[in-house]
Length: 578
Image (cartoon, rainbow, N blue to C red; front, side, top):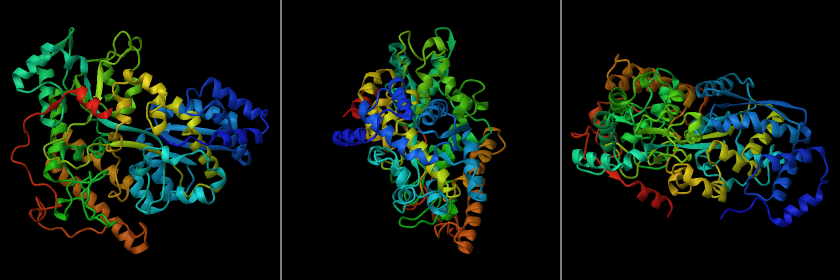
């Protein structure tokens, strides 16, 4: 059991030390009573925590700061509710702007490149941990909390209570980002349709195994085909066996870098990321901090058979089994589209959209029953034929507070106070009920989530299980996320449009990544730009010298569709509950 924010004796002493009747404390009490319930803290502990914020914020009262995040329900709550609470309690005004993920990454990159203080803090994906630890342009929070930021670091922050700090810690053991929200990329399916006896009998008769949660991509494909071409219609509505998106936009790059290749089997064994080959197909030898290449000819796997298979299946399933128009959807359109109620399953589904998927029928959500209980469930992601036990199992987004060194110290301190307020134990349970993007162990184990669990489709069970950290973000093999991530979507978009085959697109992608990393290598060698941890590319050789070798990219399989395999959903939940 995690330790409380502070001992009862310390709470009593702290409450006694401060006069209880300040206007700021009155505002804090109002927010605690009216908004920030339930909480893992008692009311007195909440007041003590808020009193600490009031005192720490006094030097910055009247300051106006700017922060930026992408648009998900969690950040909408922060932007509209928590900023108001923080200002009333501390006197610091926060402009919490929300933009698309691509614009957030672009803003971070621009501030790092120019040194201009565009924002005082970002909720920046931990996918950039390899970038931040190399470039050293982000504030090292470990040193900041012990140094310049000691007077503005909450004694009740309780880093041990956070589930995702392992993903925001650099190879040097220093914390560069503080988790604010996290969500996994899981499998989503209509349990009511899967439980229908007629569907079960028909599927078993056709495929020879039980209709259930797919363990591998073969089963996912069989289920997609079954619902699209055998069931076809339920209650007068045409249904489909698969949902995805393919719009030529930056979202399409993240669709692939968010571990799609490793779900198919790209990469080496190793969690949270493969060693020496990661889920992007980038090679970096064990014990090294220097990426050695993405192309098979350099020992990488971005254009290897497993990666090509992954892109081919994305394209094939989108064309054959998804609703008309899905190929033109972007990330933000495809996931909420499930609420229409005409899709049987989705292999690439983010738990961040749980909040939208549990809305009542009266709000147009056709995936809940009349009592508001979900007709769907979430489950572990199935894996492709190249995947081996011990490899990365899937992706998890850990959006984390990040402060860049170009931010003036006083503004950084004020932003750090707001960041800690947004993740404080006073606030976190309520924020998690709104956004359902858990970051604290104490929050997900709170009694209120035990009560609510049956209405959340497996989310609580997943985040109480060890699996919650097996799904992991992009790792440290990626030397400069903003520079490399932008290369992906154009190449993948050319597959969907028919301009290139999957092999041609991945060859071009791997080549472009190597060209970009070669530029980083020259910059690092000339000016220590990446702290000596920039790329050091292997010389290209004939791909046959790497394919199929131990710790090398996997050779092409003769059979890329083995027998389908499924598992009963209740067995999965029982494992999570152990």
